[in-house]
Image 1 (cartoon, rainbow, N blue to C red):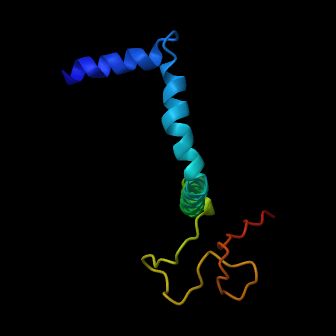
Image 2 (spheres, rainbow, N blue to C red):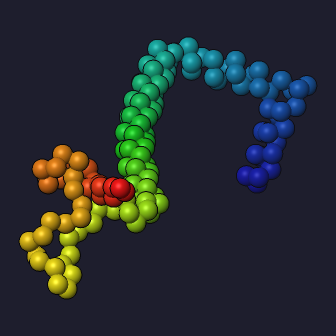
Image 3 (tube, helix red, strand yellow):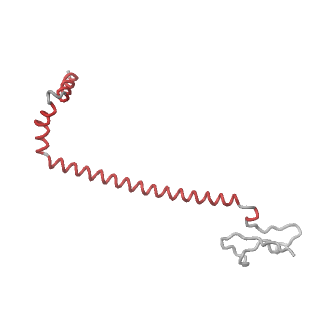
Length: 134
């Protein structure tokens, strides 16, 4: 019985000759909205404000997360760039460590020197002097 009444109501509201939607609007919906218009408007404004707050917080969170991920990506790329540079350096470009060979004295200066000649490594790689040909 419920299904038949539901179909009958749907046909009454939908069929243009019965003008059911106009009758329902004029007799039920319009008087209700006239009595409660200010309350409905207030509720709509509150919902808009809540939605705006939600969207602004979501966007702020998204921006913070995106900024963090962006800097993580830059850091990763910088590390990969350094690894790539180190992998492409020639063996002569690497700083060498003094090693003692058989028959050499341990106090003998190494073959590498720094640019300043002070022997301190200021974060720059040590450079081997070129042999002088005479």
